[in-house]
Amino acid sequence: MNGKRQHTRQECLAWLRENPRDIAPGQKIKIGDFQPEDAEGVARLYYAIYGDKFPLDYVYDPKRILEANQGPDLYQVVGRTASGDVVGLSALFKAPPNESLMEFGSLMVLPEYRAGRLAYELMRMTMTELPPRLGLQGVYGQSVCDHIVTQKFSERFGSHGFALEMESIPARPGIEGGANGRNSLLNEFVILQDTPQTLYLPQVYNVFLRGVYALNGLKRDFAADGQAAGETRWDANDFAEASLAKMVVHEPGADFSSALESFEAAHPARYAYHLHLPLAHPGSPAALEAARGRGYFLGGLLPFWAGQDVLLMQKIAASPDFSAPQLYSDGAKAILEFIRQDYATVS
Image: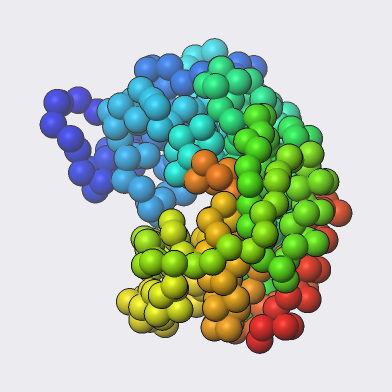
């Protein structure tokens, strides 16, 4: 696409429809960092995989793809043929608030190239070679739980499950969800550099969380219960298309119960509500008990998510279908079982 002005989503999609490019199967593939000449191929790959349904506009515009890859918020890895056609993609991108933690995602491969090792090699480079070069503390990812393929790959590269979001997103098109028609997400982390911290663990999860830390070799100190004081500082994120709202708590104060009530009132009738509590803050144990009183149950741990560890709590509109998530590792299965038990104590 030519021209200096920014093209609209509709213009980019029209150009992709009107200028198809056939890619012969069976070609040799090289994997490497995104290069400027890959921008059009990346746009074509998104269109080939998602049609016009991908929610972000920039992925259909080669110029904006090139701009996004200038860093520091996006680093793409591509699989390309000798003639320069892009047939596979994966990426690290900024999502967590911690600047030294990036999210792995965007893994996609043209159907004609899925029989080989391309997806595996894309993940390997993106999860093992790229993070040290970028000086990252860790890599975060989410695996949909309607299959275990991504989880199996992730574990090979040192990624482990820490939290399970029950039914947090709609089922994928053409794939049946659980009893409630939705899909769960396993939150996984590759930890390259730990950050020792002093935490205030809620009594109800004390044994479980200590076990998670020990199992993953994370060093933490644990303080006696603190007290909540002052006003609660928090932000909210709304994902209306997924019927999900998140309350991110920076400082849980003495007024936390009313803050949580205000958050829910501002985002009515969501299927799922998520709550992030900072474990390094002395007011978090009291805030957690207040949340449990409103039907929130454990989601799991998000290590150094905001520079320090965050506890994920969740509340959903229906009784969770605990038989639906497909989980690969024993650790992930143990998290699901603890969540199931915890849900029974707050519902």
